[in-house]
Length: 302
Image (cartoon, rainbow, N blue to C red):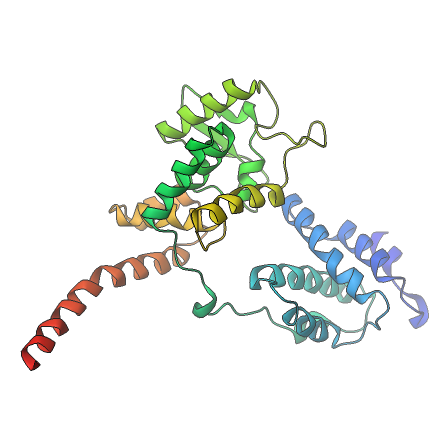
């Protein structure tokens, strides 16, 4: 029935793109979290494609347009593109369009030159000193959740008081691409700061970071991003909030933990993602030897 509702009889003109997108998401098997993310991301494409013909090269044109948007990160551009590709793939599968426009376009590549430098130990100290000086228990907790737990921004805002088991020192979080919550073991300092925050703000139930505008909702990831970015601006940290998760991962590897155990804490889907960190850390450790060897040669030459 759903597929029939989307089908076009006799090659007639397809309905407006916004209508087709809504119906596509109704009949596409996606995880709730993925569906929600794509429904948000596709709004950009809908606005852009409102008066454009749906031809085979529309996603190629869209990708080129995304490339020209100032300050649009490759990650965000890929999210917009992935949502549009999903829609067009389904439009073809369901028989709405006679072609699969998603096959003609690939994701944006993120080169090493565009990756930010990691947050340093000195910057970490500055950020925590800044938060403590402001006497802001919420900000101190957020930094602990990012640094000592390596939580993603979406995972942070989703936390509820009921997810916190103080005696067991665990937190049930809704991980990336997950439908069910998974347990995260908390560092003692995170437990202390979480209890301090809950007592200070009088939060007894529901989301630990409730929205001030929408009753019963949590703050959005955009709001969290701004909170952390304000700290970065004040402490001269040229990095995104996601940089804290990279610090978390790097610290575990630098501490001597094997990659299988690191994966348990970071919850990366594959070890291959972690080998990038391990290789970078190993390379950084070998640099002093490299410098020292050629310093000696340079001195002998002079």
